[in-house]
Length: 178
Image 1 (tube, rainbow, N blue to C red):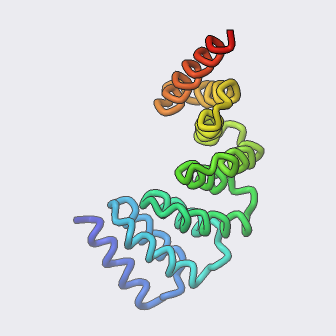
Image 2: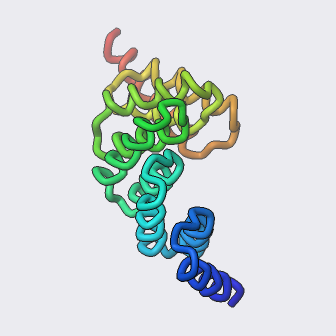
């Protein structure tokens, strides 16, 4: 019930002051927190009418598009975020997710490398990089990347899965070569 009251309070505030970027951001966050991605997206779009050069709004919008499986929209939003702030590592990581979902592994690798230049401890970028290498059948590179992710977060489930698959495929390749 508290969320409904907060939403109504923010909407009232926005009626009085429609240019209050913090109110738009808080409202979008509440919608996101309650799983109402449609309203979160629309609210971020409203916020962009006030601050179209806000990289975090574009990044958040890209994240939501990814959550909804709208990868091309996500790429467009994330690219805008990165035009504004090319050092926003989370946007590079989100972009790598969009590309991996579209099976564009070369662009996934490029986006991961950009994210890792900014934050070498981004376990998601390392995992996505490993997954892209695995899908390109570059198993040794995949193993190396996901091991780096697992050094950062040892129980990272997806990284462990990719590591197992890559090690198995690498072992099978070596067996076939002999």
